[in-house]
Picture 1 (tube, protein in one colour):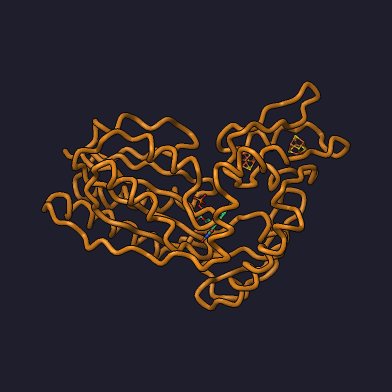
Picture 2 (tube, rainbow, N blue to C red; picture 1 turned 180 degrees about the vertical axis):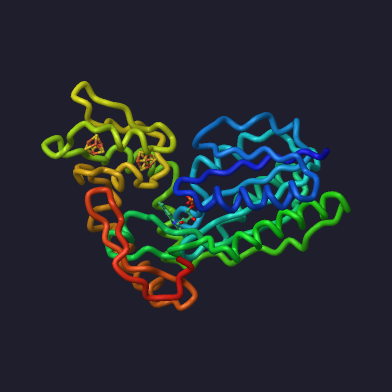
Length: 294
Ligand SMILES: Cc1cc2nc3c(=O)[nH]c(=O)nc-3n(C[C@H](O)[C@H](O)[C@H](O)COP(=O)(O)O)c2cc1C
Ligand code: SF4
Ligand code: SF4
């Protein structure tokens, strides 16, 4: 039985759901599939598998740093078929290209690329009252993911190659925003500027528990202390029930970009959204303004 390894990162579940359905498609075509979320476990050795799949959300128009790290750490893939899937809340642009390019550099054989929407729990958008792509991936998108899995199986078994098309690069303003999520800025600027208001912090530990990369440790008093390995996902700030965390992304410099993004995305008829409030670690839907699957 051919073996496929699907490695993805999923913080809020959308990429996981897409990955599971791709796996269902592959299993239905006779593949033995191992699915692994890098947030929860170390992926097994890729050499034991015939096909590799990489799944990722889009963070600031590119894959998050932990996905980039995993793909760069892969050994020479010596012609192994590999596919990529993304979930995204607003614009993905050419976010998949860095993964697809790196896989080709590792001598993988491109087997396919799939993308669909995933509910966008980016804290700063929630604070402005918008949950983009609420209710995604939909049942139809998940059915397409399963079909994609079957297509991959067929392509691998028949030795066919897909037509490899690349996507558009983002416009200048989004490219600039992408730069603000660079590893260098994350390590040397964002990580140093996380602050906790110790008068508000009740030492509940939720920020630590929700960090997908274990970047937060506890001070003697139980308050969070940030390390230098941050994805900039803002999950720590988002989950804090006391609203005690302040990050650089909450500053007025970032606010201008965030307001621009929200204005553009909320007026784009191709991007569904729901109206929400986000308070004390909880997101509550207040209405739905576009066709939603929920
Ligand atoms: C920090 C952060 C940045 C994001 N940036 C983008 C983006 O640039 N473009 C986009 O389409 N979606 C963006 N999203 C939305 C996620 O890519 C999308 O919701 C994805 O489906 C989440 O996957 P998950 O549920 O598997 O974690 C962002 C989300 C977060 C938390
Ligand atoms: S989640 Fe908030 S209240 Fe809880 S430990 Fe972290 S900063 Fe403190
Ligand atoms: S933003 Fe917070 S939760 Fe996300 S990786 Fe950085 S420290 Fe961890």
